[in-house]
Amino acid sequence: MFPDPVTVELPGGKRPAFALAVERLDSERAVAGVVKDAGDDPDVTHGALVLATVWAGEPGTGVEFRAGEGVGTVTLPGLPVEVGEPAINPVPRRLMREAVARVASAHGASGDVVVEIGVEGGEEIAKRTWNPRLGIVGGLSILGTTGIVVPYSCSAWIASIHRGIDVARAVGHAHVIAATGDTSEKAAQELLGLPDTALLDMGDFAGALLKYLARNPIPRLTLAGGFAKLSKLAAGHLDLHSARSQVDLDRLADLARASGGSGELASGIRGANTAMHALELARQAGVSLADVVAAGALETVAGVLGDAPVEVDVLVVDRGGAIVGRAGRSAS
Image (tube, rainbow, N blue to C red; front, side):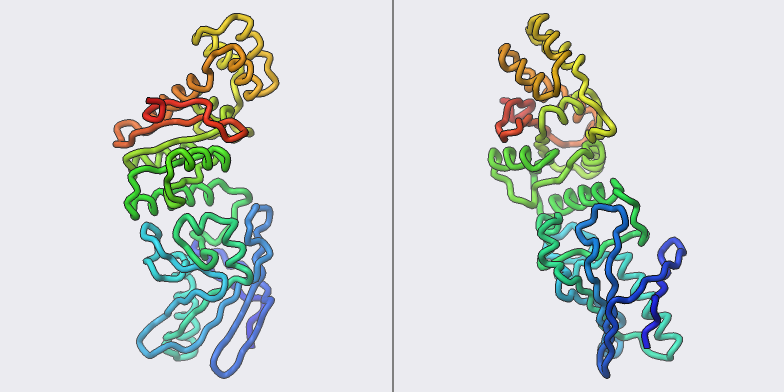
């Protein structure tokens, strides 16, 4: 008989209970499954059926982990799991080993078992994650450090940025692209011809990426983004989300004026509807405002990286995917 619900002890000592969606038992194997509930977190695995299958292993082997259907396998170095291993992170592995040890001790068993973790539809779901870029093929990763989901947490995204840098370093990339979004990333990749494993999904977390790069440098970084995002970076903001930083049109107007623009242009930019509207006004007036913003963003980046041996260039990309501003090596 299966206990239902199942109580799990998390790393912090909490003991939540989970209702079982699948219970199967025969003479050789036990299978249990739960449906993942991500709560308010925008997690692509919300509602997925996660299955654990356990059977007896060879004597003396301890707990062996395998990737079931929908769970990926690690193919590149730089991740916390060795190449060739199932993409099951160290903390989930530890929790499962401890659970096996408790049950084995209670029943006088050896604890030599194979634990296979699968996710129904996981291979398809994984296409909507960063796993392919991190060299995790065939499905999803089994992640976790605390066992607790923080709704719309920044930590998961930042952790993925860090792992992307780790993988890029491990495979020997000397040049990476960090972009605020898909359009700027595609423009930079087309220009530079770098592989997918050299692409870092920075999003709005410029500060998190740069601080980690300062401690774990890669020789060259191309930072690409839209005009509005990079104008915020140029103003010194390291979190580029619209809820946490705003485009300063007055500052853009002053930059345009200092770059030879007229008072009329500056006035127009101050009253612009959006950052892109401001850029268009500057374009019409023949003022390379995007280059000025790229140079300002480069200055901010250099300030965060400090003495780290990272050469940086910045690309400003418009909504159509055209590169409209440059600074650093790409501008030479």
